[in-house]
Length: 73
Image (cartoon, rainbow, N blue to C red; front, side, top):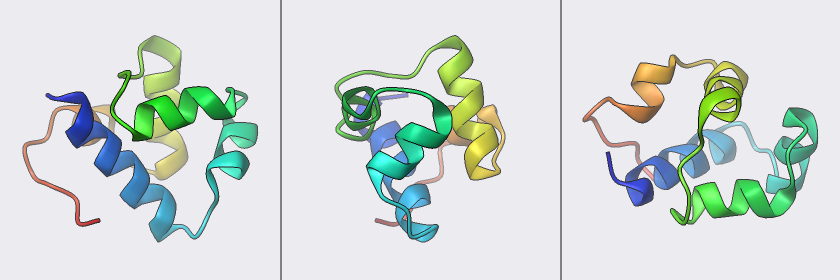
């Protein structure tokens, strides 16, 4: 899956929770710039961050990173 699609999904999930990027980054223990790079589609989360993001947003890793359905932004 393309990183820009994943980024849109991550952003949509965060916005639906009404949370800032800074807040989510703090809660996940990752750098703000790392979260931004995911949401902007510059990088795709790997390993532990992939699982942490899916868990935080209450979705499966498969749904977040492999599902073909688009999230609304």
